[in-house]
Length: 382
Image (tube, rainbow, N blue to C red; front, top):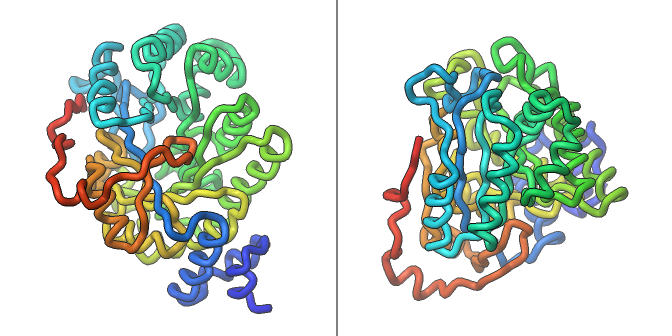
């Protein structure tokens, strides 16, 4: 059996075979990844989520060279949102039938741990229908250092206060030779710590996603090493807890206006689609793959639906991190997502953050009318 046939059949590949996939013609690789996607998800449906990104603070002491979002406490444009400001953003989400907030900030050493616990309690009291997925492993590690608690103890406290899940932020490239290079982010959380905290979150039943960013100058073998580490944790957590990564989300490094600009090669649409296809084939126990319209634009995101992606991602009513490193695509309304999915030949279905379908939109009516809410005018702090 040829490697391409083996890949398309859904059989588990070795790391060496995955590296070989990168050398296949792009549309041969697409065909294999699309076949696997059709084996594991409904071939006719592409899902999407109505949610909002909330960045509660931009104060951070890690200082990644690829981040244009973080500030020191003394900079004039540093901020920490009040609970009421966060609630106002959520009310705007509720007004458009949103179901989740994805909330991250910097590693802010000036916020006491009780601030985070009180925030979780506040959100659950005032917005009980909204799932709260917050605090990347990097932030959890920062809270651990602040309190002297273990990351697992931090997670248990946050979960008891109302936390539903962890976003996959901070994964980037799970190869320390790449992620901790001097020109990238030597102070970044290690690959081992990121994976361990995700595994601990999974042991508690918290929702998690795996992420990846390409374009640091990493080799194909290093990309596959990232996949292998994610797959190993997926196998372990499914066997031990029945709970693991529900989705894989990858995108290309955004370098405009940040310190890493000119020091790394970046990556374009070809590499993005290629990497997405390899991830769908190799990560055989992760069911869902998102197309990254915020970094790649809608046409490449549509194309990604034929390279292994079965989900169009979310509306991301407010996104401040990737956009501040040069991503041009922001605040896409539900109507536009539905149009893109429909134009690609699929049936759009609204999901929740657990990938359960919760509504079938009236495509004809939605596309025939202008959206009632202009997302570009929604309250954005940063």
